Image 1 (tube, rainbow, N blue to C red):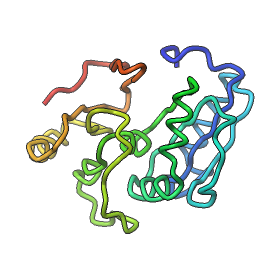
Image 2 (cartoon, helix red, strand yellow):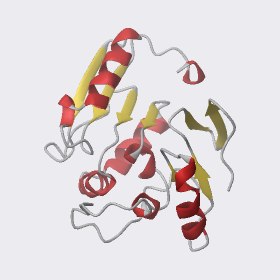
Image 3 (cartoon, rainbow, N blue to C red):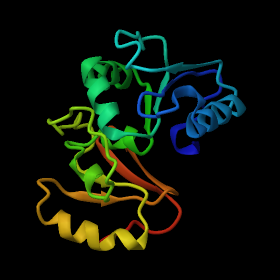
Image 4 (tube, helix red, strand yellow):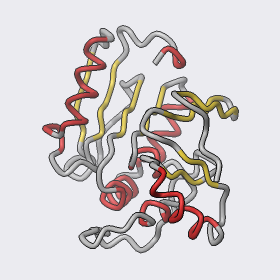
Amino acid sequence: MAEIGDIKNKSVAIITTADEEKEAGKYCQLAFEQFKKMDCRKIDFVDLQARPDYDFSGYDIVYVSGGNTFRLLKFTKAANFKIAIENLLNRGGIYIGVSAGSYIMCPSIKMSEWKPDPDRNYFGVTDFSGFNFAPFLLFVHYAPEYAKIIRENIANAKYPMRILTDEQAFLIKDGQIKFIGDGEEIIL
């Protein structure tokens, strides 16, 4: 968090939409505890599936948790969440996307289906276009066993690909992209 400055006394909305357990989910609770330790003045859980008309104008930070990327995309699009993100960023706010929350910021979420999952629920999503705030696709939760899957699929990708482990992130600010975290960026 040092990369984004002091967030003490900031207001935070934790978007739980992708998480099957919503605010009770392990990672939503972890985010809540971390923001609490950083002395944020207000921390709210928001599920855009239940509250598509939620007003984010009073928040300094919007944190979008992981979970089912297709559920997240469906309900963020239905809520016109891209406009809320644009407004947040235009007034100097911070967007933090984790896993599915980072996938929706890309031009497409197609890469989220590269890992085999026979029980994947698409939630009726057929348009995989994301919000296009990041000028590349992401593959998150990288482990060496995914190298073959990435190589097989990257050739058909319409956009550049970036890869992240669970200890890495990209900071995008004023059009500049900075790799942050442990280890070197994975290049395949």
